Structures are given as C-alpha cells and as structure tokens.
Image (tube, rainbow, N blue to C red; front, side, top):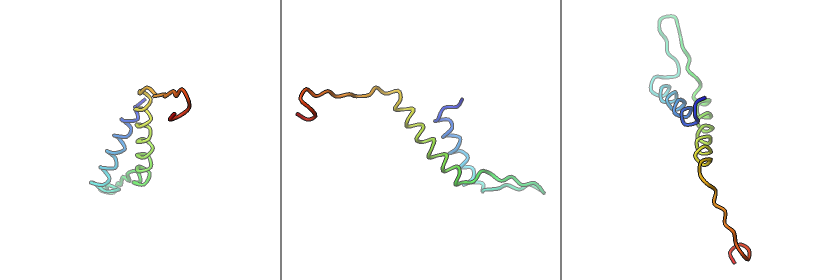
Length: 72
C-alpha cells in the first residue's frame, strides 16, 4: 500500500498534468477525459491531512504534570 506522501505526490502530479495539458486529450476519433480537477483537489486536501497525521504519529507526545494545578 502506498504511503500518504506517495498518494499526495501522485494527486499533485495529476493536477499538474491537467493544468498543463488540459482536461481532455483527443487523438483521431478517440478522446480521453482526465479526472475532474475538483475531485483531485478534494483528494489533495485529504492526503495532506493524512501526511500530517502520519508525521505526528512518529513523534512522542509531551505531557506536563503540575504539582498544584495548571500554572501554579
């Protein structure tokens, strides 16, 4: 299974491809419609959150203990 960072890179490459080459490609009587840009943007947001979550998962959590309550 691909990591969140790999999926994010693939989605960004697809977005870049659409922005530079257009939404659809025609050759002769054949036509290829790429994924909708709106859908790719939604996936990009989701994968960005997944990447952030994965990067936080490897970090230790900080826990602060106060002897007389917080800030005392």
